[in-house]
Length: 313
Length: 287
Image (tube, rainbow over all chains, first blue to last red):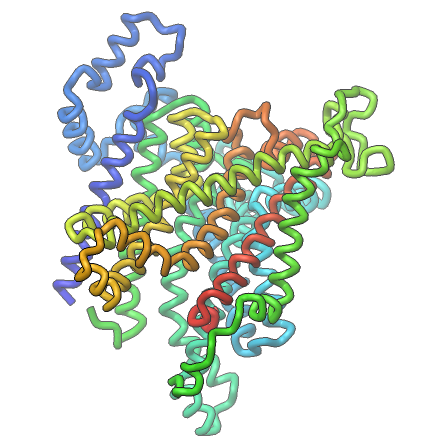
């Protein structure tokens, strides 16, 4: 157990080191001099030279990489060129809508997908099963911006049930802000429910074929109890895995969804950073998101231990 | 456990398996139809974008324009076909390029022990970046052209193929016939291609079909965000993005290209699923 943890931690450190390296190299791969690229064609040579010094571009590449790593480990991801603030400050101020949107939509996805997935596995091959699989595939095929725009047009603009866009404006209260996240969360939740539904169904199918389920039935246990007590409990592990896997989907989906609903989150920030060529913000977002991904997957692995006592590493 | 009788039985033919799942045949037909429509209709002059006409701007679907006219009075159906060529082309390009790159990386990682750990960790690190986010950054850095979008999305998806190829290579390289080939003095590249690669074609094909679908979705996402290919070349995602301004009075401008994406991706995913079931009966039981 302890050696497993140690191995996982070392693996995680290596991957995070590589993530930092990739993020560093990516920005350096941009054709042309980063400083003149950032300042645009109208900048004078003096301004470009000054920025080169400020960014440390006059140093040898290894030294630049070294100070980049050292800064990143201290939590310094550089300065945003557009906001003229530390990247971490900019990211932190945009974190709330993105984090709440991700959690909220995960909840929506779980509420939709888990019961249907269990029911579909239980009635394998039935019309309901076929329909649910096809619907899940459809949900994964419709681009989330289309779902979002349909909701925005019909549920928000026409029916007025939800706010159509934004985050309630400056000084909006908590309830108001959350109200603005309902449609985005449903949009993103529907897209992500597809994968969770298929995983839940597949793992329930495995479990329903196990000996202990047959034994429980043979003992005369009610079907309801068999499914809820025995099967569902053991389906927990694969479901946790898939929740870890959907993290990447959630982030990618959040970028698009925030754009549709004009939410001031990290997704919208990174798209604007791309349009403004604000490389430090792009780099910082990549690092933070990838590090979170690695962390989430470590946590899901550790959760196995908590859910299933048989899992030994 | 399979008895001697069942293990001796010949594997069911691909055609039979596909026929057992009519949905796969339907999906394949739909996809072929979409591709044919996009490439043949404009080529034979059956649809055209038409000139710009202010009089007809935002005309709804009807007799004059089957799927309506856009803000410049151009025929939506005609544009849909031309845009489809780019969207489908990008999907196919990504599927091919990421497969070639992924196969190469995966074979090298699986075959050369010294390179396995560094390459595997690199694959892990690449997969830690969510697809749209990584593609977005790559396009931001290299600029948005069709080639760069294909390249960016291939960088995103190649690690998935590489992971599958590496895992299969690790198993196959230990099999007796590979050992035999080596004992006969066959050179490593020959073993890699003729003995290993030929045996893992089906999982690669299945994955490539899914990547085709994901890449089309991702390209649509990038174009929708305004950071995909040059907006002068229409793609389905760009059409949706353009239609956003008219969301309240001409929703069809968003709906039709959106449905074109959804239908193509859905049919590809069903075909991918069908292929997986047909080519790998072991996996079929699980899903």
